[in-house]
Image (cartoon, rainbow, N blue to C red; front, side):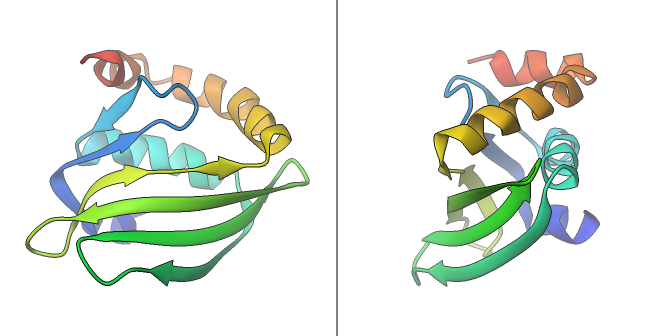
Length: 120
């Protein structure tokens, strides 16, 4: 997890694909979120990265509760090449529903991070 967090800019943010309203900000809140997200996935495979400018798309596939979930993760880089913004785009709907059901209770264990993510 440390290597992943090291790729993030200090003010990095992730827009929740589940709520659309929640935005997790900062390395520590993203560390909590990403640990819960990636801890629940199995057989994660990054397939390709598309783009060569500040905006890129990384395509991945994994399994959650035996169901395949795919992600087209749009990320924006800052001037130093660190990730400033993450916008996951998940599919299919069944996998998203299962993902939300399993992730929700894990994230709820971090109420301060959830409150911060709900602030505008």
